[in-house]
Length: 479
Image (cartoon, rainbow, N blue to C red; front, side, top):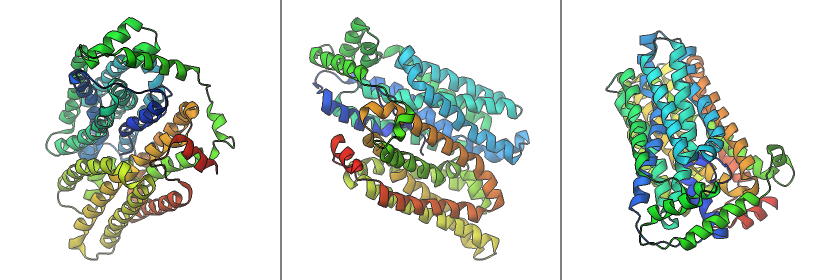
């Protein structure tokens, strides 16, 4: 799903968990050359603790899919009330993501993770004890705010503590854990009640809060706020007692000084002629990423399978959960092998076929044609859709976005793009149930239409950025 975003480590640029290695690699080429020796045990432990936040992110996102019927029946919710419950998490996440940079800079990466965990735990308890829509929605909003902070601070923390030669693999774990959290929520939701499922969401936060006592703060953040002694202690703890950290410490300090000296850019400055094409590419990809329907299909997968006439919607939900993990792994391997444009176009083509098959199944059902084949066609379409999305449209737009803006405008560009992305996520997740009630066939054909437009947009507007320096990419865009 398109909900695992993070920011440029020093400049606030939002992108998915998978992409911190891209950001840092680009900046490392300009400013940093890490010396890799010593122990990595503490780095691995710190990563394991931090990705509990990634798992929590996935758990929150996946919660609404298997619980829709049960919550609506137990609390007598109308379609509009459940649509608000399902979508309000995106509003909380948008606010959390926008404020997360300042929070993490003010109280530190570990402090931000603690704060996020507390919000999520409070939200889950509110959901568990809710007896009506108000407390239910407040709980969902709080978990959204919590994962909005997680979406920034977890990958940033890992990127800041990891040696360069491990950063790519460790940030891939982040993306994988988001998908695992979502899949586990789907699976558990088929066998336990919605209230008990809410309690399971507390577990990753508990592990995170305990684990934070045993790991160091980010050395980069300590250097940024001027805590030089603590900075050196944390760096040595991460690299091992026998590692020579003097060169890396000097390079990190020089890099922080350089970033702080760069000029600040406002969002309005992005609409000048110098950056407008980059804005069109970045915002356009975010719009299409959302409006091909991912948060509608993902949040309400169980409803879709029920509407298609599947005798046990849990079968479809389980299949949906199982498919996500291996496909996400495949997408990570293809990222730097196939190129951005081909992966985007193949992915969007796959979402078109998936939406078309699912829409066709509802058309056949409405006309009483081939009724025995309708559930199979619907499940196949949804599984093809999520597979295609996971392999390209989920992460690649954020990769491209991280590469098309110069470093000094990434903060403003990130603020604009994350706002567009989360607003799109809210619009799709809120309207999905209403569109399905109006016309299920039309809903999926609408998403199929946006998939076609995505292919055309990528073919005509989006440049290939694989294997190019930032300067080469800027030259291509400006030409």
